[in-house]
Image (cartoon, rainbow, N blue to C red; front, side, top):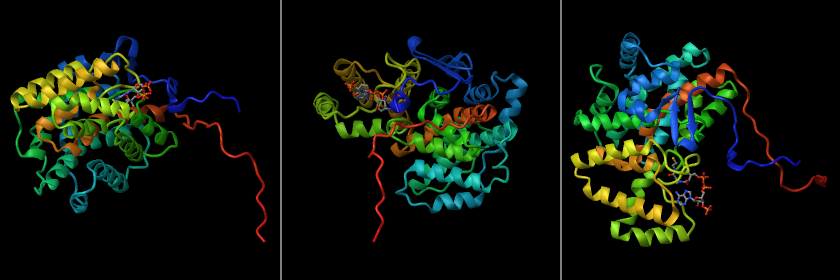
Length: 372
Ligand code: COA
């Protein structure tokens, strides 16, 4: 066969979408036509999720109804709670989260209902309940009992309440909310594509979210925010950055938090998240970490011409907010669940089975000899 091989599907336009547009030439990410950083500055994560799912921002009545439904769906049932509490503390939080979504799918009588209404309901259920699961996991790793959700708090405030037993300063909540909006959606990234592949076989929404969660876990995708903090720990000191970087690049290893498959000249979401990081660093005594952050960013630009991606700011931001490093990628899920579920509905609405082909380069045909 003489087909061109597109390893990694680089540059391949696999389908159309109306959910978001990634324009690398103008360094722009649009959600349903609105620039993601503008939404993050002026609108909440719930408004953004509503936009991604329906195509329009909610009016006041729609937002009130959507908010009330989200708040009513935050509780997890005792059987799920005890299953999560029984998992080893050594298990990665992404494995815990993936297992929780699997269980939600296994116990929801509507799992097999692929109608858009049912899928949106399940999407809202996941959007509401995943923070409860992640907060429980953060606490159990510290030997602390779960804190049930409060329905008088916004989604981000309630998440901090459940994770740490207190709602932090407004600037910290706002920084978290902004990160949720910026991470909510990104077109055909690897995890969203995995979710669409699962949907394309007519599998269910929970299974698609499990597929997305599995793809997001890796260090080249969502796992990068965890890897960024581990990298700072490995380097140890800003003065050691140059030697560490030289050795890393000479070994042909990637530096986590830099580069992007689509944006080759920087990502328009980064400055806003960077500003949040600086603000939270001022509040939380993060001056040394910021110095470290700037030194490595400067060295990467100088030596490789590469700029930070969104995960480079998210890792230190979540660290300063008080989350344990392995919890960072589940925080990404709390945002991307909006985009994944929007794509599941879109894929199902005009479904085509996603099934590429490969060029075979193995052994030529040969005979099976009879066994005597
Ligand atoms: N560190 C060092 N070099 C990097 C790099 C990084 N983070 N990202 C890209 N490069 C270099 C590659 O080594 C390659 O150099 P070469 O042409 O001399 O071989 C070139 O830039 C192209 O990289 P490539 O891996 O082919 O680009 P990609 O589009 O496949 O990769 C990423 C995109 C995101 C996978 C890649 O930039 C990466 O691995 N980044 C680190 C992980 C990360 O932060 N992921 C989060 C993404 S939002």
